[in-house]
Image (cartoon, rainbow, N blue to C red; front, side, top):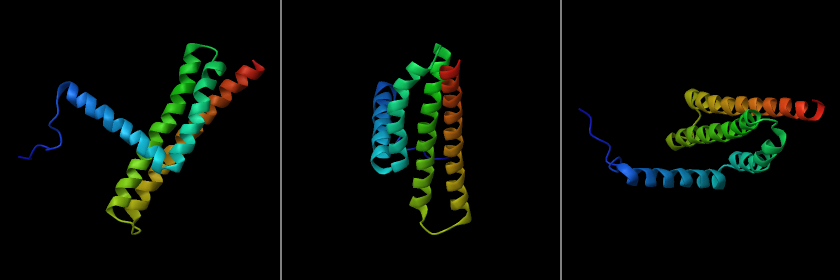
Length: 128
């Protein structure tokens, strides 16, 4: 039988409080240490208000906001993968390369999705 995790002792509202705190620590650490996240967050700061101007309905606005949020979420996950791989070793290894490439591909796909949704919304706003 496996031992319980000694770091998982909080319950109830204490657990919620600490989980929220750790989440914000993660956001601040990503902003401080990850230039790609910093660039995407700064772009999001412009795009979020723009979504309310560009969206012609609540659903369109929500789609614009969700694609921006998706990019940030995927970038955070990619950064986590890279941190774990680098924590293990800086030596080149095929599986480490694959893990980092998968994370990079996920970020790329989320950026393409975001750009596509925003391009369609902008097209309809300007020409429709």
